[in-house]
Length: 92
Image (cartoon, rainbow, N blue to C red; front, side):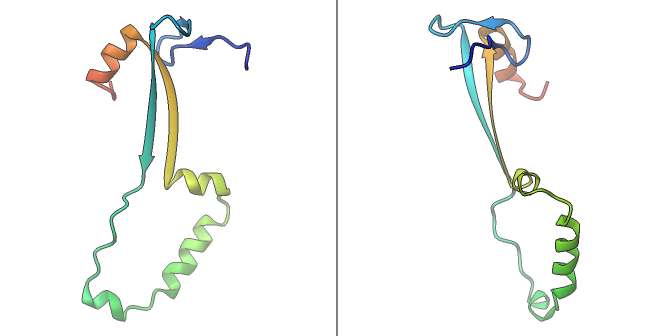
């Protein structure tokens, strides 16, 4: 177990486990999981050039960076006050 203090992600207040004074928030971001829309003209298209361009674009991308483009999971800790504000407006 780490000796580092547990801090509110938003205001950096020190949090004390077991006192009911914070929330643990799990965030999962997933790239659009729906199948692509395929038009009949797509079935006759040669995609080799597209695949080569995708592979070239990913050449300098680490495996972790590539994974982060598809799935990302974060865990944040928020004190009670910050949670009340965050839950009403997570982007603000």
